[in-house]
Length: 103
Image (tube, rainbow, N blue to C red; front, side, top):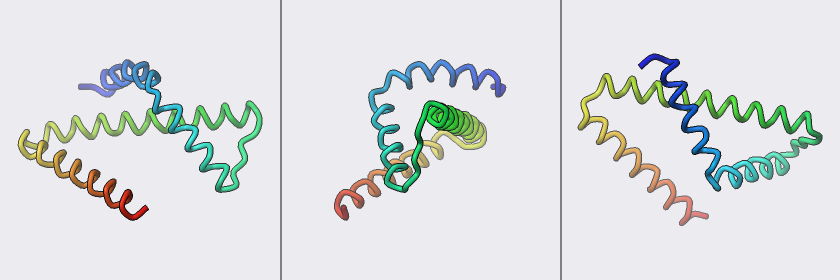
């Protein structure tokens, strides 16, 4: 697929992503972390800049992941890719359990 077609597909997912209730909780967490670090974002201009920067960064990351996923699908066999995703899932679950036990 071309980059523009991938961009159009990602834009369709944007509407679904905005409907996620976890999105607001995530950005509240980011805002609280900024406050805890001493970064004060005050006023409409600063908030608009923060929101725009966060949106552009998230979209860039999403498009990068889509391109990487397409590249991996072309280069790797289906079984290898399946094993890679399963290994990543096990790693993430283990990290979550470790953080829960340690915290």
